[in-house]
Length: 448
Image (cartoon, rainbow, N blue to C red; front, side):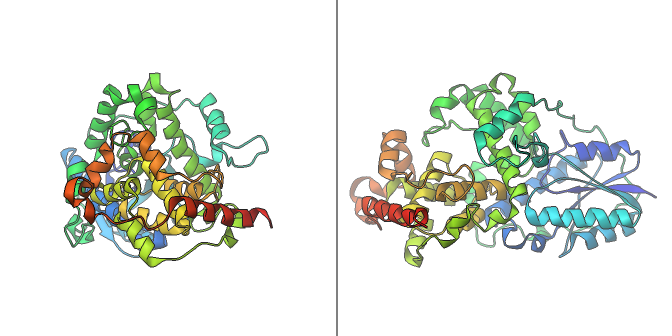
C-alpha cells in the first residue's frame, strides 16, 4: 500500500485547502494526521485559551472527515519529524503534504523536515493556505521588506487577484487499514480547572462556525463597519480572527465572499494581518526583541503588584479593567480597547511589552504570534509602523469618545453601579503624572 499523509496544522478546514486537494490528486489514499509537538515551538507554544479552541476545532474537523468516510489520526511527541517517519513506516506513505506556517521556529523546523524527507526519497510539499500573498512575494522599491503598512497594502492590493476558493472534497480515497492514533482527549488540551465557561458561551470553533460568523457579518455589521468598529459596546466587528488563526476560514474565502468590500476598512484589517506575517517572516527576532534596536536600552519598570492588577482588571481605570475582564471571560478583547490596555501597560505603567504579549498569548483565543508581536511593539513604539512615542492613549478620554454611555464599562464592571461602587479599587497610577514620566523616558532614547 502507498498513501499520502496530509499533515493538518493551523489549516483546520476542508474547504479551500490546497494541500488536501493536491493530496487527493495524487490518486492514492489520503491519511489526515495531526501531530501535537508543542515543545518545538518553545515559549510560543499555544497558550491556555488557544488550546481550548484547538480542542474544539480538532473535534469538529474529525467529525467532518468522518462524514466523508475518512478520519483524523492524532499522535503526539517531542519531534514532528520522528512522528512523520513513524507514520510513513506504518502506512507505506510516499508523500507528506502540509500548509505553510510563518513563525520562526516552525519555519526552521519545516525546512529541516522537507530537506530530510526529500533526501530519503519521499515527496514533501507545502502549500499556502493562510495568506493572500506570501511574505517573500512582495517588497519595496529597494527590494527590501516593507516596514510601513500603508505602502505595503497599496502595493499588494493593486495587483491582488487570488484564485477562487477550492471546494471541499466529496470523498477522498481512504486506506484499507488505518494507522493507530490517540484520542483527542489524550492531548489534554482542555483546562484542568473549569474557567472556560465564558469561552463556550461566546464561540463556536470549527469550519461551520467560521462560515456562519462570516455570513452574519456580511449580512449586516460590515455595512457600518467604518462607524462602529471602534465602539466596544457594539457588535460592529467581524470577530473572525480566531477562525482565521486556526485556519477554519481562509482569507481567500473572505476576499471572494465580500467583493464589494475589497476597498473598505474591513478588508484593510485583513491586509493588516498579511502585513504582520510579512514582518514576522522577515524579522524573526522580533518575537522577543524590539525591531528598533535603541529600545533595548529603554528604562522599563518592574512591579509585580501593578502587573497583577492589570492582568486581573483591578487597576481602578474603568476602560482598562473592562477590557481585561472581557479578555479573561471570553478569550477576546475589542481592538480599540486592546490599544488602550496596551498603551496603559507600556506607557502609564512603563512595563516591558513582553509582559503584555505573554499575557495576551495565554488568554486570547486568537493568539497569533505575528499579530501579537506587531501589536505590542506598535503600542510600545519599538516596532514597524509603530505609534509615535508621544502617543499615549488616555483611557478616560477614550471611554468618553468610544463608550459615551458607559455601556461597555458597566457590562464588565458591574460593581461601579450603586452601593457596590465602594468595592472598586482606586487608580493604581495617576494618568497625567505617569504620562509625563513615560515621555521623559522616551526622550532619553532620542538624546543618545
